[in-house]
Image (cartoon, rainbow, N blue to C red; front, top):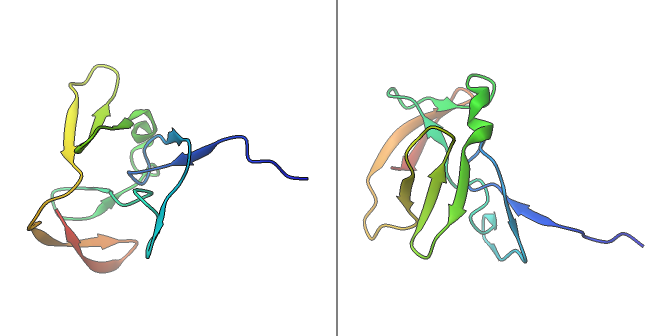
Length: 101
């Protein structure tokens, strides 16, 4: 009989994951899983293919933010929600999308 030994979410596509005790679902799938991404100044999605060191970025869930740490860098807190988020056009694998920023 298969057994689940650990569950992980990856809040930022391409960055390290977070082990969680359980996973809640919404219409998009596991809550907070791959809901954020890194984009460059032109709005192009950046992946580990272009920036392998992204795997060293460690997200941690705080009550109202996602706190990012990496060796040699200052902590960065990203708010988990905004009442009226700004929107911008981004490009992911050649597709243009409207995203919150």
